[in-house]
Amino acid sequence: MEGITKKCNKCGEEKTATKEYFYADKQFASGLRSICKICSGKHYYENKEQISTQRKEHYYNNQDEILAKNREKYANNYNGVQELSKERYQNNKDVILVTHRLWHSNNREAANARSRDYHAANRDTSNARRRVKA
Ligand SMILES: [Zn+2]
Figure (cartoon, rainbow, N blue to C red):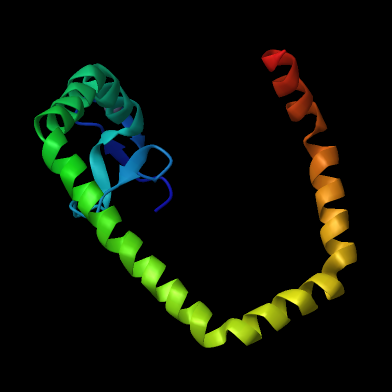
């Protein structure tokens, strides 16, 4: 493949026919897009507003439908998850309790260390947050 060049259909420049200069695209026989990466980028940039407007419009036009679908999905899932975990809990209550207790006594050190690490690592962030609040 080395040395083979490919002419970009947009800027007309000869560039090495590799993925470094052209995006891969199985639609083309060469396996590469007919316009170079730079032109592909320009195309997106030039149409960015149009593309995002289209997306926004799609969302706006279908807002109710999208929201209703999401709500429905959540409601269905929510009950399912609740029922399932309740059932699992009832069936395995003893096992779960014993396992939890065991885990805690076995991992007390590890759990303490972890929370120490967490606080140390996040000291700056939590201080900053506190400062903002005050
Ligand atoms: Zn080009």
